[in-house]
Image (cartoon, rainbow, N blue to C red; front, side):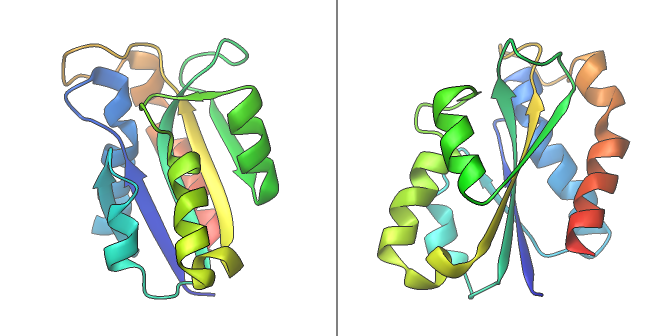
Length: 148
């Protein structure tokens, strides 16, 4: 199954940059990674009909500890991210993806995975918190297992 990994985040805002850092590691390993930063709509210009899309992004929630990984698949991603977990961005990746799926019917057929990493700090700075940084190897392994 062809897979596109979307790396989201803002590396100037501490833990919000974790999606980009994980995406770069995966790209170095040869995976198909698109860095979208904070603009999920970049996907529209670069989507080539991949059957699986894995979104990596920082999330804000008090339900889990900083550094923990939350994996949501399919409709669960759309439901839980709306109700329980907040994106670190003004318009969350999932809200943007909903709009894009209306525009591009191929996206509506894609298998969606959301891998959220709980942020400890979203503030000016480029360093990740120890909790988030220490879990990067596990995050990379999880995504590699999703790709297969």
